[in-house]
Length: 316
Image 1 (cartoon, helix red, strand yellow):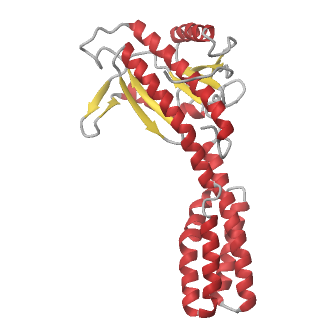
Image 2 (tube, one colour):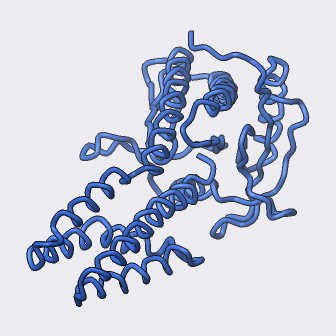
């Protein structure tokens, strides 16, 4: 999801600012009725929280803010009630209002995220079913703010069937088509989301064989050896990659970004994109570029292809 971390933090900040504003007014009312040390302490803490939330580095204080507003504050107010029976009704009313306010914005964020992830997962599972028909392969799905997956294809994965490199070419083509379908559906779905969100589409093509082994304890495949672990390292970091000449982020909405190494892969990807463009999924003017160095890896290339969004996609 494009900028999901920043968006989530902003939304939680807005929720917390609303709570702090309510708390400030409440404590001001209490202090006008009764002079109390605990009320003054809470007012000072509330002021500190507001400074955090309105400052430029509010992200580092989100956990402390959450703990105060959702845990510590309730304990202090219960203690205040037990020592001051005349404040019981007012404190209970305040806590009821805060409960209704809980997650006003963050719930809408999570609902939007779930809605998009649901359609992405549908498309990815449809793509996986297509791949298994081409050649049985290992597929593993991961859930973060978006949807990620690993796919391993080769003779050693399915030794009972004859492997041909043409299978890999077709699988890569179907992967690009799958991403275009996701972009189209997500663009339409965006109109119905409680909070506006956009998806970014990133594919890492590894051009040479890697060694993997099946870990019995985890019931999954994983890479082996130093060179192969380097592949995992690159894969995990390319979502933050930037174009070397401009410093621009590689990923952007409605655009498929493909990262790779080597001129042989560049030729194959050019052919793949030309085929996919001929089928009406992406524009023909895709552009290649060199990426900035990623933790010692300086030879990464990328291509971006803009998705044609004006087509209807349905699962068949």
